[in-house]
View 1 (cartoon, rainbow, N blue to C red):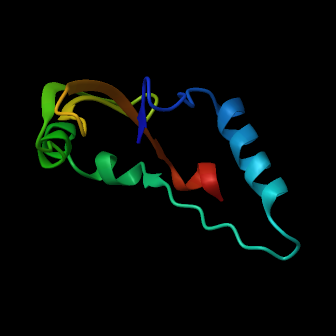
View 2 (tube, rainbow, N blue to C red; view 1 turned 90 degrees about the horizontal axis):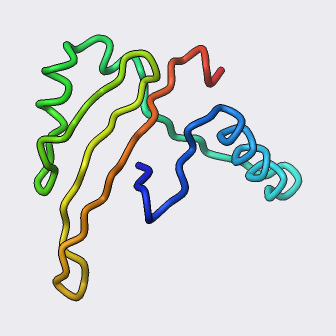
Length: 102
């Protein structure tokens, strides 16, 4: 999950490619890279409303939107940090179709 303020956003394919390229360069010879990605077929198979309702978590506000054109899930979380201060995190998660990662 990517959250503004905590992590940089990977909103373009070029940015994603650069991150994967750097991970590959960091591997030792014959090293293994385990890649985990959110499957875009999951929200497509379920209705969008059902998908969003299933994924509402404690602390998440009602600002939740799944964009079928970009396969991005936008949400806002309100959490307490270690000092008890309330933090608002604007997040987006990118789902990938199998054809994008094969």
